[in-house]
Structures are given as C-alpha cells and as structure tokens.
Image (cartoon, rainbow, N blue to C red; front, top):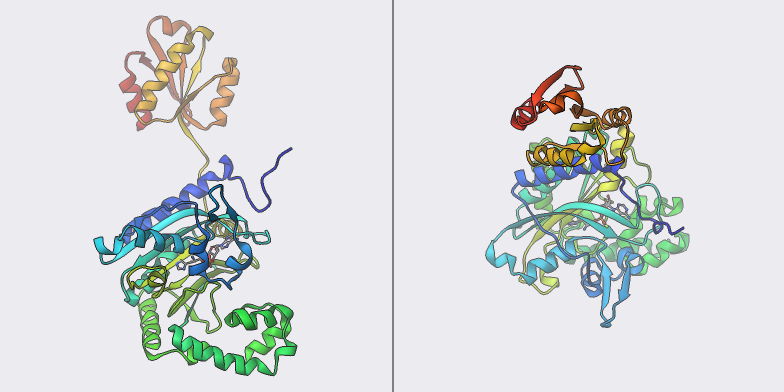
Length: 419
Ligand code: HAM
C-alpha cells in the first residue's frame, strides 16, 4: 500500500474544525490590524533561500527540498515565507505603491527535518511581515498579534522571549569577542559545536549538549556589544510591550536560526508541547530587501507553526469545539420521490441552509438514524398520505415538535428552520 511520505500528515475531516477556527482567528486579527493577505508560489528558485536565510544555516545547509526541474533550474519548496514575500515585494514594486506594506499569510512549508511530535516535513505557518518602516511600534505590534492569536486559541502556558541582534557591524565585533572566549575551550566542545564555531558561531547558544551549555553559560553576550541605536530601539520595544500588557522576558541567548535578522528578535514558547516548544519565531530584517536587490527597505515579521499551536491547544485542552451539525435532513418515505427530494434540497441549500438526504436507498428507520448521526436540527418527511394532499411534516429534533406545511410554502419552512 502506498502511504503518505514520512513527516507529512493528512488533515482529516474530523480535525478540520480546529484548523477553520485557527485560520478564522488569524484572518480576523490580522484584518483588525489592517494587514492584507499575500499568497506566493509553493516553490521558488533555490538561490532566493540561499541568499536570504543564509548558506550556513541548518535550513539551507541540510533541510531544503531542492531539485533540478526539466529546464535545468534549481527549485526549492519553500522552507519559510519571508524570502518569498520579500521577492514578491521587490518584483511588483509594492514599496512604490505604498510606503508601508503590512502583509500576512497562511501556507504550507517544507523542511527535511527529523520528524517528531510538533516537527514535520510539510507543516503550515501563518505569519505577518511589515515592510517599509523602522518604527518599533511594528515590532511590538507583530509580537502582540502573535500573542493575541495564541490567547484567542485559549492558550495560557506561554512565554514571550525577546532579544536584540544589533546591526551586523556590532555583531561582527561581538563574534570576535565570542571566538576569543571560546579559543581555549575548543577541545571541550561537542563535534557539532566545533563545526559551528567556523560556520555559524552564534548557534552555539542553541546547543543542548551539557558540556557546551556549561561553556556557553559564561560566554560574553551579544546584548552587551550592540550599537546605541539598537539598544535604544530594544528599550522602546520593551516599553511598548509593557504598555500593551504583553508579559515578556529578555533572553540574551536567543539567537534565531536564520541569518537575515537585525535588531529585535523574538519567540513565543509553549510549556505544553515538549521539546518543539517554539510556537512563534520572528524579528526585524532591515537589510534583507536591499540584499535581495530591492531599494533599502526595513522589515519585521514573524511566523507561527499551526501544527504546534494545535498540539498545544490539545495538550492544554483549550478548545471547546461544538459537534458538527446540519440544518435539515430530508427523509424520503417513498422510493420514487427521489427527484422531488433533490429539487426540494436545492431550494433550501440556495437559501444558505446545510441540507442532506439519503443517497443509498435506505429504509426510513435507517434514514432517521443517519439524521441523528449528522445532528440534524430539523427533519422533513416527504411522502405518505399527506404528500398526496401537497403537505409535508417538519420535525424540530431538539424539542420533538412536529408541524405540517404546504409543500409550496418552502419560504415558511425556511423561516421556521432559520429561527
Ligand atoms: P522559524 O523559527 O524557522 O522562522 O519558524 C517559525 C515557526 O514555524 C516555528 O516557531 C515553528 O512553530 C514552526 N516550524 C518551523 N519548522 C517546523 C517544522 N519542521 N515542523 C513544524 N513546525 C515548524 C521562520 O520561518 C521565519 N520566516 C519567521 C519570520 C518571519 N521572521 C521574520 N518574518
């Protein structure tokens, strides 16, 4: 039997209500903040990701789904959305049409990571990107949007962590200091960390190896080396978060796994999903647009993992999703009335009622069982003696009350059902 690819998941009808709820919450909240939705292709030129996320990152180095297509172009399934949004922003000169572009998305992403709870190879993100302003009001706004969406999903066990990466020049002099500190400790580092020392030294803070963690505990911190402008901006973000009543903690060891960040970075973690606890990650990227060939344009954004959020909701038991219901089930008492049922159902469906009936030539008893299983609010009985006089019976399944209507009075029935 052919099965789904490892690390991918079918989202079955029994789970879809949770997805609808989250997606509706995401759309409503972004629209309240005046963000507009953007959709970009699922695949892009590989170069786009290498240039933006960074050659030495885990994502580009070992997690991308890349292939050469029939026209010899190297293509990659998008591992994240920021690069694609920035590419589209430049390609369509969005910055010329509007000085500030506030954009959001909900889309599938692809990374060949080792699958585990909360970590998939095809997963879904929603996120927001604001392009065109250096104002820290946007950094705080985006942290707020992510936080309020999670709160709206009933999550309580959340931690907002923030840090500042400074500007690249300050970061470069900090990296020299960090390298100096690690120079005589190299031999005590894990093999992975020794490798990262050469390629992506900041990621040493992410190591979960005991001996690495011990060494990194006393390492100099980036926050003590960042430039004055970044420092002032970091203070401003904190002031705004306090004003917005968003609890946060400064984590000077928070280094993100993508290279494009400048100044603010942040994550929101859940205490209820085990090791893959980051529900949200984001930050400012003031140099990325220019780096990808556009006019210098500051940017800031975040992305959140939908599967992880739903896992957190499940573990916190935070969602009370009502059982599926339909408005009306039409029970056919006589076999030969099928075309009449089909026609009647159309009339109700066109008036925005959810309606179903039997397609399997089932007995009346079995049709009633089906109506109950579907949680039908009303059942309409078509056929029998009263049908000969142009009448039908409509039963309210909750009260048990039954009322006779003229078959021609569909509008009256709709009124009764819509109450
Ligand atoms: P990221 O931290 O790589 O950032 O991903 C954001 C979120 O996507 C994570 O916190 C996690 O919830 C989810 N996620 C990532 N990988 C997986 C996976 N393999 N399985 C399930 N969920 C996953 C970014 O993607 C940046 N583009 C965020 C950003 C936007 N920064 C600025 N703008």
